[in-house]
Amino acid sequence: MSFISVRGLKLALAGGALLGMASTQPSAALAQNLSFYYPVAVGGPITKLIDALASDFEKENPGIKIKPVYTGSYQDTIAKTLTALRGGEPPHFAVILSTDMYTLIDEEAIVAYEDMVKTDADKAWLKSFFPGFMENSQTGGKTWGIPFQRSTVVLYWNKELFKEAGLNPDKPPATWAEMLDYAKKLTKKGSTGNVTQWGVQVPSSGFPYWLFQGFTTENDVRLMNAAGTETYYDKPAVIEALQFWVDLSRKHQVHPPGIVEWGTTPKDFFEKKIAMMWTTTGNLTNVRANAKFDFGVAMLPANKRRGSPTGGGNFYVFKKSSPAEREAAVKFAKWATQPERAAQWGIDTGYVAVTAAAWDTPKMKAYVAGFPAAAVARDQLPHAVAELSTHENQRVTRALDDGLQAALTGTKTPEQAMTDAQREAERILKPYRR
Image 1 (tube, one colour):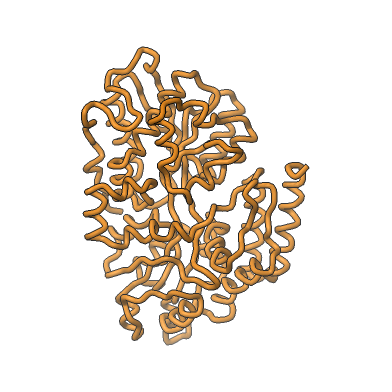
Image 2 (tube, rainbow, N blue to C red):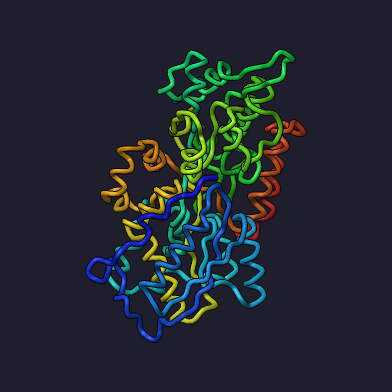
């Protein structure tokens, strides 16, 4: 993979301060060494960017040392975090999935930001993020996570393959019916009858529930309640959405059969094994760097409505730390999410810049003018819903993932798979509904 530029990450502090940031001369109370758990789960040399962020922050705040600890996938990160927590040595702060908010609260692991920020500027900062990202960041009237590397699911398409199939290369499918029609025209078979090019691919490993939420949101149904105490896996509209996904491969044969790997889906796209793919906006920079053809990015196609789940990671600050360590961790979170820096992070990674102010910066405006695809995820946010998140989130999500994979491999019907998943989720969540 090509190197992602870190230019622009070294930003000078105008007048010595930005919103909510103190001068570069720290107080003795802020002389801290902070451990920072960070997940590496998508394409691109993200670690170089994080190392640069930590280094630049330290230069501007000489009394604070940030030690990034790269913890693997998001699933690895929450597992390692909980292990460290139970061992008495959790990180000072971490980027962990927004959906793990209830788990971290139930473990009494994290501190609400309202308990750490005091000034009017700090409170304004808490209100500066896109509302769609805050659905998975707040509960009980408090903010537990700060959006950092957030995303939605989007559709990528190969314009060259569209043209070869007689399709308008500048017109992505806007509905499920159009996507199916396009996929039929884009699927190719070799002389032996084997498929050499699939019309569409939606990965079903890694984060199957998240990709599935694209289908359910478009079918105008939610998978859980806002309190994280109920799931709706067996609703007719959920089963209908799963049936459509299953039918893409088993009935219409325009989608690879069985389980499709999350990590190899972009590679399949680069190699022209697939003409359309659903994946995270976090892969945008990766695709731009590695696709040797003209491609497009669009909102997911609608059925009853448009929509996608939000996704990605938040900054969490851990309770087992001193007030000064918490203050330093919050200082880093504020620093990393300032408009210019959030804009550069979005440009360098493909994640959605998390505030409207970031999109209003000259740097981001110039980037979007030259690469309009970068704004697709932002424009999809008004149609987005909260990513699946409940108490006992790992177990409740696993019940759904197992059901999805059973249906996609044909070992269960969509109806039976979702009925079984709902029964298991209800069993797990029963103590939280008392």
